[in-house]
Image (cartoon, rainbow, N blue to C red; front, side, top):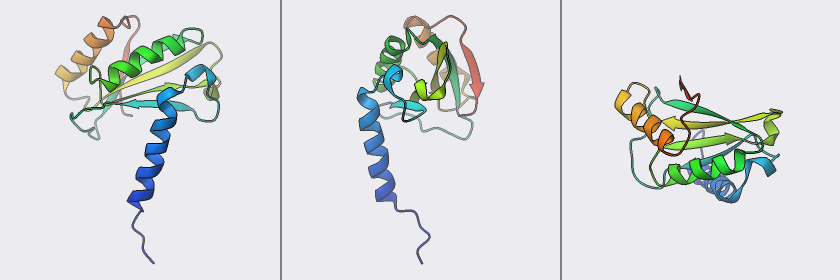
Length: 132
């Protein structure tokens, strides 16, 4: 019996998930808890010390906020990945967006992402948390 994971199958599932998430809007998705966006260019890989900036958005503004964060993530302006809570999370009045940084101990990169979020208009009540 082979206990090794089928990496081809895992890659296919991940690709299908990212294709689904590419056009998904958090206000319209109820089948999964999170929609993700990943950086589309090379960059530092996440370490076990990865962290994230937490952005809270109202349910009425989440689709526009996510579109901005998604684009900035994919173009490499932010961290290696971002994710947004969908309506499946049952948060009645707000949604969470996480903007991941590859290493919470890299204070220069954490600050770079904070400044980039500010440039995008997300400078109110940002909270940085260690761990993914």
